[in-house]
Length: 69
Image 1 (cartoon, rainbow, N blue to C red):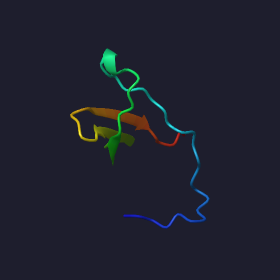
Image 2: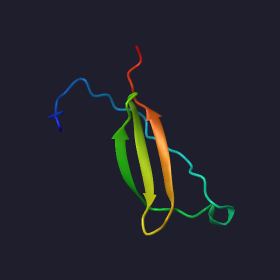
Image 3: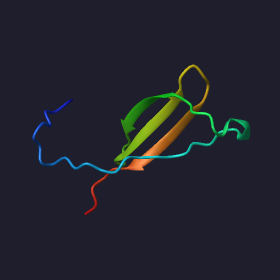
Image 4: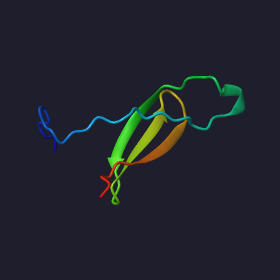
């Protein structure tokens, strides 16, 4: 379900997410275009799956996006 969030004061902008994914040594400086699949886990973390476009590479990132109490 998508909610209308225009003008919603509950949204907070956060810093960009940057990470380095493990690759073979000989391909260390190569950029790898990926498609993203996102899901929220049962415990409330954001799971991003990075699937290499036109290749077999795949990586999973889990991010804690729950509000701190």
